[in-house]
Length: 423
Length: 92
Image (cartoon, rainbow over the protein chains, first blue to last red):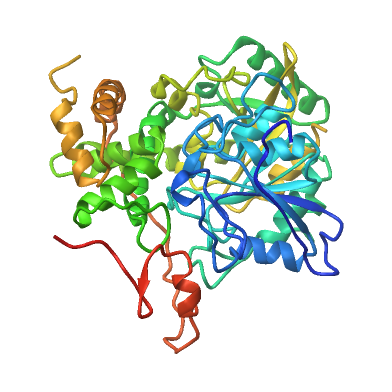
């Protein structure tokens, strides 16, 4: 496995019949698999074996899929390169020497390298769309509430969704058909409201009469070659009967800081559970309760995870809560409003998924702020709880470029229809 | 660095609140990086107050007894257990 796609290679057979019989699926290693270790890319959970399946995994098995391994990822989903994994970086099969994106880099790379037909990832601020774009595959971040998060190890639970990767829009949609829908174990879920028979059926490529809004703010500062590839793809959609117009999302200038304040705050709370007592990395410190926990967390967590836990703790601490957390929630509401208004003027919104081509390995690790800023086009969608898809748009200097489409809540079919016109 | 930039003292304090032991090198590194990140977060000051119109419905289920995770299964990942319980470090 030259690309280091999997943390654990293990075959889990699904049911004898179902829509995914004969399909191999890679599952991101923060999605619980009964009896198969689930590490979240962390030393903290190096030996953790879940006693139950995530709902998404149960649904894969019932649909007849064969799970072929647990895919590598940035530690606890915190990163955009899959380099923060305790189990080493993953290679980008579509761009050697470059990162596969993150945090679901192993999932995207598994599909790009042909190690699996399909994959599941999770997307808190772009963690499905970024690696899909960097590895030249399709990735869908569903509307918040469409896919159950039961059994997904929580990072930023008001933001994240499990979603599919595939080599084609139709295959990704077919995997969404399997995992979508309400689950009594995740009270935020609801049933899809389909116009057609299934998400896969929406992959018709029919964009005649469709209005595509292009938010000008999401092109500012993007790499020239990426922007050129993006406009070529829009021209392709125009040639098929779509029209485009510019729209504005003034709030997105504050989306990255709002996203990181909210995600880090939620992370500081969610990751408080890792103390090495019920599960996880344990230490023989001989000290008291607090000393032992602090030691277990020092050894179990990597740099980026510590950074986010500490910044989140800071943002929620007395005297700073109103300045950071409350303002971030205002920004989130503003971003939602902006998207609602833009989606009244256009059927879908389009932008480059990532403003840059895949980074070279090691490039972004020393400067966390620069890595956060690369998420400018993906994080607003999570703040607004909306669905989005990243579809290959072409290449710049031989490197994959992804196009992101954003639609109204539970409007996945429209995104699938539009994205399939680019194949 | 501005006057508002985070101090090494504050980084140690937050680390203590979060129960994460840090090395001196980590304190230095985080103090530097947090100054950059927090300075960037300061632009949230420019965000106006926005009304939040959440259209939410509570999801309830009947409060009925049902099976939960088996005790042995729940304890399987614990490094130390005693008489069917998790065993933690000394409280003081």
